[in-house]
Length: 250
Image 1 (spheres, rainbow, N blue to C red):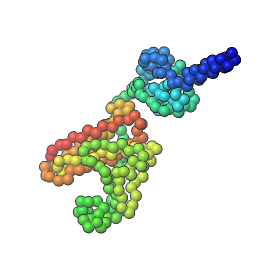
Image 2 (tube, rainbow, N blue to C red):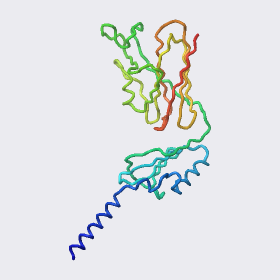
Image 3 (cartoon, rainbow, N blue to C red):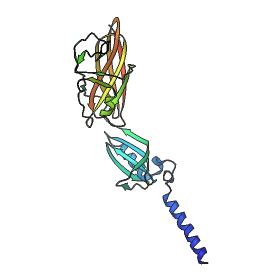
Image 4 (tube, one colour):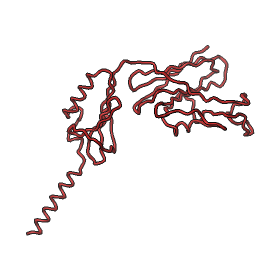
């Protein structure tokens, strides 16, 4: 009889342990945005707040619990399904389920031109850094590399990323403080020779940017490839930058 009792007790304990370790299946609801009263209340509050940026993620934590990350104006707060705040919890995966961006837009974004100042010995060469025989013809020079020139823009937020697009001979490229800044590297090709290029960086909404490039070209054939490198204040991970290129005939 005792043996049967202990077997039954073990089965009960095992069942309880398994139940405790199972991840909560989306908090046992269909739609957390409407079915969780505390989250619905927060969303209504955010919608009535001017000049605000909020992202809400549904997360799976390391302990396999389902919860939520609320990112408000850069400040992150973790919640469980009951709306209780987690002090610390490692996130295994997350999915954006709601966002709102309110503010006075569009605005023009200030930037600084990033230049590779080269000191050429022979400016008549087309291949930067080396002549046809492989001998160096410039000293203290850097040049852009790995660009496809198809009217595209690259968002660079680290030194490691920047190194992919720069080559240098006998010198170092200008440093960028990536803890405070982002480098926008745009490149493309015009059908004819370019004689004027203007640029404007705009922010249509809190998380979206647009780089406008206006190119004035001559009617003569030539290498119309171009590169624009701009340093702006650090962009968030959610930021998206579009490139708009306009070509005007002379």
